[in-house]
Figure 1 (cartoon, rainbow, N blue to C red):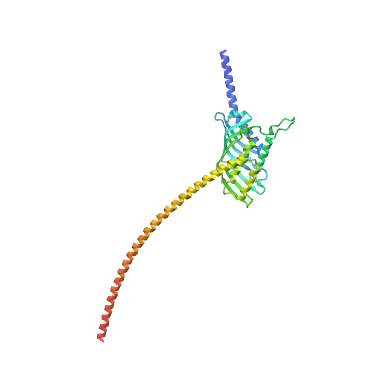
Figure 2: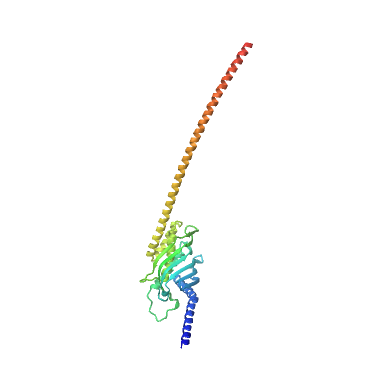
Length: 331
């Protein structure tokens, strides 16, 4: 009897280990398919992912080489290229309709921002995401047809922290003549994207990422006012008032901090210049004193030479007088 129990326990253990190994082996492929399908449906443009990994013990997901193709009508192949994205999540929520995400970190994304008189590629993506968001929020229509797998992602998200670091933006524009501007944006941080009462769709999360990038570009002093106004107009078309207020607060705080650092640097430079001016003034005073002393010495030398010249002149006059008297006597 004991032997049978041991065999049964061993079989159960092997099944559990096999199930865990299956999750570890195949979870990456499932995640990859899910991200690509969800991103493509939300963006309405091809989204590809190089690879995905799931750490069961750490409760984290890693995504590598995420590329989002540009909408039609734009030159660059990709609007977004993201090398590494890490997601810290509540693994238990992955099986529910609402996935709880503690943190998303998007590191060093490369963004190709194209601006023309007809609009921008990021504005076009925002429009696509807004359309997807409304489709997800619309009540299902009454139909006897069974929804297809492509009807759209049903998962909702609660993202407590979303951070974008070192975003590199290459902006090409033809509104003010063909020019290219390269930017590195400051860190962008979003809080509470989706709540328990009102979770966010994938389209909403991606919409806020795109809008955060646009807001970061608008805040840069390297962007011409006409381009900033165009981007601001496209951003205003999306229903993102809370996001804009949150980002504006961060960017204003960043600008204020930068101004404070700049003011301090200018103050330190001014103090250094004043000290250098005082030192130069002291040095000039010392040189003036030395020049005065040299002048006095030169004056004394010149006086002595004058006296000597006078003596020589007097002696020469006496000699000339004696010679004249001698000449008169001979005559």
